[in-house]
Length: 202
Image 1: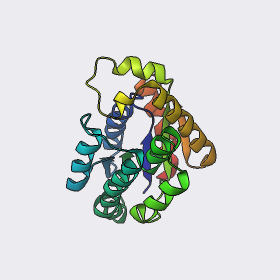
Image 2: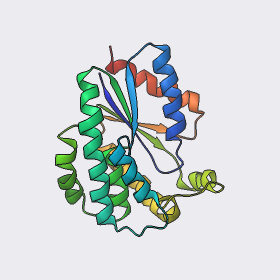
Image 3: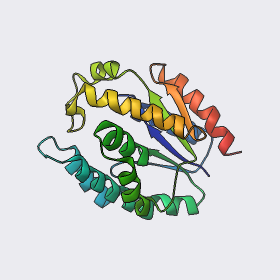
Image 4: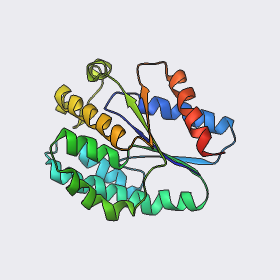
């Protein structure tokens, strides 16, 4: 069964799409799990709290190590066992988030990010990566009344760089990327995504 990741800048609608995807998978009587990054394990959730805490000052290099640590426990404790049980896996964020945010967004060399994450992911890459692509200005408007986490507080310019990074990754890894217009109605997005997923589970 496929390993599917959902990526996009903050406010692009990942949680909404995942919620609707879950309904679709339940409707089709498919066995699946949904995980998130950072998080998904007891250690990962503690790391998530630290990473997103606006009171914490964390450098981009430190972020790379912390995200990789959370990712390592998630792969080992949750994702690999689920794959062994033939479950569909949907992950809200994965390695591409580190490449987009810490790499393209904050200037950490991509080669360093790959090197740190190689043992964490144990050569496990997604079968499909769904990129919810959207103008960062729209996302900032969506988030304006939300209590923002540490990353969201870094503002519009970071999100612009991250979006450009995601689009570069989508070009590099075009065989596994599906770029979706995230301004569309959520149900329309899910139908487009489902058509691609369906080809992976036949």
